[in-house]
Image 1 (cartoon, rainbow, N blue to C red):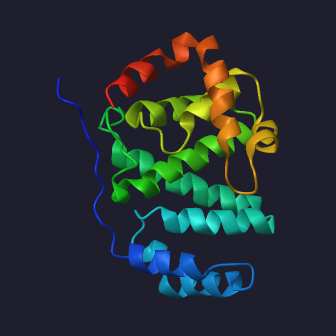
Image 2: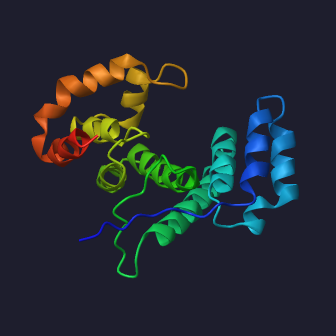
Length: 197
């Protein structure tokens, strides 16, 4: 059976968005928010999901959880609508290597992290598993999150242990390779896929 591969289209607003991201820092965040609103990137292209995610992160930092959650849910629902068939089945392949897919993967990843943070491990791990299955190269680190949930770590515990100020170092890989064999049911298919590369 032929694999169903999803490749999103190019989005015109992408260039404007990434230009704004380049200049965003603590001093320019208010300007960037105004520009995002002025440019109306979400209205111009509601299926370019990074616009939602950027505003989501800003609202989270500002403590506006309700508004942030609405934006994240909208981005997630749009992502799922793009990559599923009429029966709700995900595409077999959703690769990070395809630049046009990254905003979709980020929306799903952020939703999974959100659910994990809220204690909804079943929802979170389901999304992480689907991300790993559709992109076994796992550029977003879904396998690490799956293992952490299986080892009963909360997102907060995981971040405290491995987040080194916005990035993960080699200790995360070491931890993964020391522990993932404890869950052969979880990672056997991933191991087979990785052998192909």
